[in-house]
Amino acid sequence: MSHSSTLIHKQRLRRASAEGVRVLILRAGDFFGPAAPGALAWLAQKRRGHIVGIYSPGPAGHAFAYLPDLCETLARLVDAGDRLGAFEVFHFRGQWMADGRSFGESVRRVAGDPKLPIKGFPWIVFRLAAPFNETFREMLEMRYLWDKPVGLDNAKLVRFLGEEPHTPINVALKATLVDMGLIEDRATGSNGQASQIRSSSAPAM
Image 1 (tube, rainbow, N blue to C red):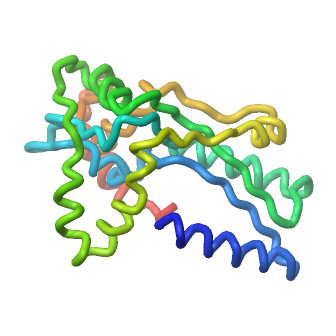
Image 2 (tube, rainbow, N blue to C red):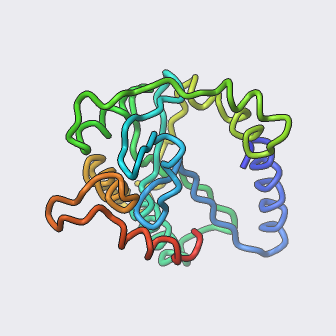
C-alpha cells in the first residue's frame, strides 16, 4: 500500500472511531516469515530452487517484521482490549537492519555461504515498467524507505505490553528460508518443500 493510501485509510479509521468503532493499528516494517513465502521472494535471487544472491534495495537502515513475533504482539494487544482506547496506534520495532547490506550479510550467515553475492536492486526495471504496472508504481513510491533510515519507535508498545516479542534474526531468517525451500534444514534434511505446500493454503494475514 502506498504512503498516500495509508494516510487516507488512517483518516477514515479515525473518523470511524469517533462514531463508536474501536480501532487498533499496529504499524510494522516489511514482513517475512514461514507461511508467507512470497514476502522475501523479491529480495532473493533464485536458481533451480537454491538461493544464489541477495538484492540490497538501498543504503539506509530498514525495519523488518518477523510474522510470528508480529502476530504474537497483535494477539497480546487484542487480549488487553479492555485497556485500549477507542483509537490506538502502536509501533512494532521488529528486526532493524543498520544498513543496506546488513540483511544480505544475515542471509549469508544463515545460508552458510559467506560469498553469496549481495547485489544492488534493479530499480531501473521497475521504473521502466511502472507506467504499465500499479504494483511497480507503488514500490517506486516507497523507495525512499530504502534511501533514508526510517525506524519504528516501540516505546509505547513496550510500556503497554511490558516487552515486544522478538526472535533472533538468524533464527527468524533460517525458518523463513527453509520454508521457502531455499536452504536445507540440517536437523531434518528437509528443504522446505512440505512447508511450502502448507504455506500456500494458509489464510492471508
